[in-house]
Image 1: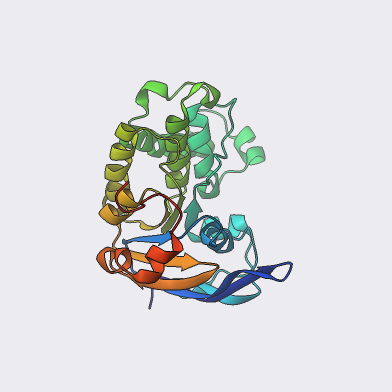
Image 2: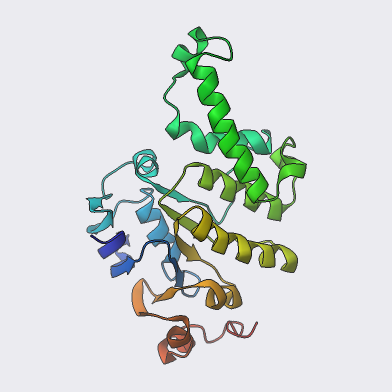
Length: 261
């Protein structure tokens, strides 16, 4: 059984085909990157996978089960988590609290039940302790200890991106969608992010789908790359094959030298 695959995925907006008959298969615990010029359909694919959009046709299969038609929260419960181009965090909550939100789908004690089970030995308290331990591990992993109790609003953009990544990891995903995770980061932060993405794949046993404009990063960490333009596949293959494909080079004409930036 395939771990994760997309079959003949299509969606149109006002007659414009944003994604047209796209198919790919992602191997377990691999890093699969989607590249293409601005407006090529990359984030639309992520929005379809995470249930924000519903396709006109096609299937999104995770471990044999079709995700199409499921709500975003149900898809998250099935094991698909994501980060966004534009950071979606609670600015007036702490780093710890934001990452803890990623654990809510795993909590069995509801708010009313929890209110009646007081004390550290109660089921609610034990569940809270266990989930906080998981979050503390993520904070350590992403080197966020120094800001764990700070409000997100006070953090740099790069740190906020890490908090969002931490929240996605807290969901304990099988498939993690990273939408331009290095945007707004400086060179040092990007180098650290490269290491973290590889470590996430290994330590958390997560399959990673990555959208990223930094092609040096893409070429350095991807197992396979899917290139798209105008909502349609150009090529899928190994980094070296995609990098030299004439249609990929043509699609990026007029933009910066993506492969040597």
